[in-house]
Length: 160
Image (tube, helix red, strand yellow):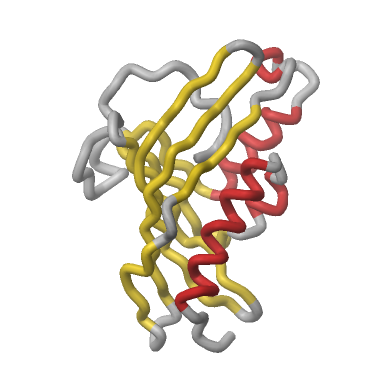
């Protein structure tokens, strides 16, 4: 794959959020590398998900398990299903290592998750570590830093 343009990196992040808003979880999971992680730190400035507790630290297999749970006929917390909406600031391209094929973006967001009469609003930043693979960009790490990461949360049903 040739080096992506800044606009292609921005478009990738926007398309990823749209897949989540449209509940297209299989397409979304397909954006991740086999060794990818989805990480939501529990503390500001957290640098290591293995040495400290996290709200989420899931590899691709666990993401798939969560998606299957969301689809389950006996997943009563999803009857009716949760929905979500991402409001993104324009993603910033923070780094481009064309020799290694690794790119980093940072995107401020507001995220709304709703089910029945309940709506929960979250705000934060998503950092994507993207890699160029044979024919496309893929997510190696998606880090979601919530502004109030140290608050007491109810169940976060979907993906930010």
